[in-house]
Length: 308
Image (cartoon, rainbow, N blue to C red; front, top):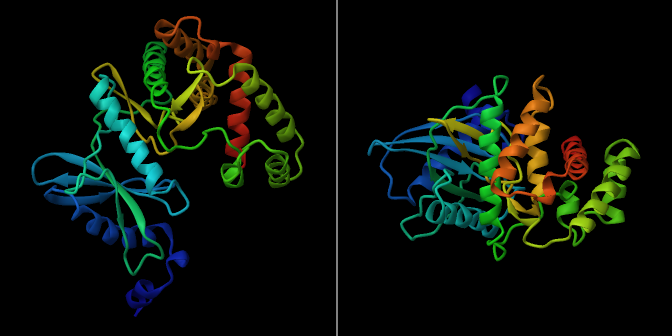
């Protein structure tokens, strides 16, 4: 009786493991769209999206991502996959390689009666490597800086893709023409319990954005979430995953995200300088490495995380 009740419980009332079990069936249906012989499907650590490791009978390994219902729509997910495909085709940067469906689509939309809404799903080849956190070293962050600069050089050429801004405030902000409008900021302050420091931080970010402008030398398509859970190392090389938050923004914001991720590490200042040195080795004199600009975007990132 308990299993019957669980199987018939509304999706919203299920705990995370119960939702993953439902989404597993949807994932199995999504995989039928691909020419991949599946041997095993294993849930991975659940974030905003739900991901599964796919071990293929062909000896290859993949990651299937089931998109969250309130995330980017299918057109924007296809744009994310198009950037990844272009990066794999046009650079030697190691990022997830999208697997097209039998119909040559970079995404598939699947419905299941046990899940309230259709879900966008994508399949990518597995990226080998190891994550490093407390033991991050200056040479590793130098390499991350180089990688980020090269990513930005490519992102500067990708202006036609359908992706939003990475620095908007809250879900409401992303739905507005101006993600920093007075109405957006008022809602953000209210959500932060009336903390006016949010308004001040946004005002500083607005001023810096205006000063930088939106030329291709300072603004373009960026990763948007490049912290140490999204970059990894393999045989001395940096690799990046999870481009789900990619979008248009200032390159300084992308660097600020990486810097913010280092905040709790005792060697954070050394790592920050190594990151920027690596970045400047590819893009010397870049305005986004200015300390005042970076600190403003680090503060903005903290506000965004607080409001999630």
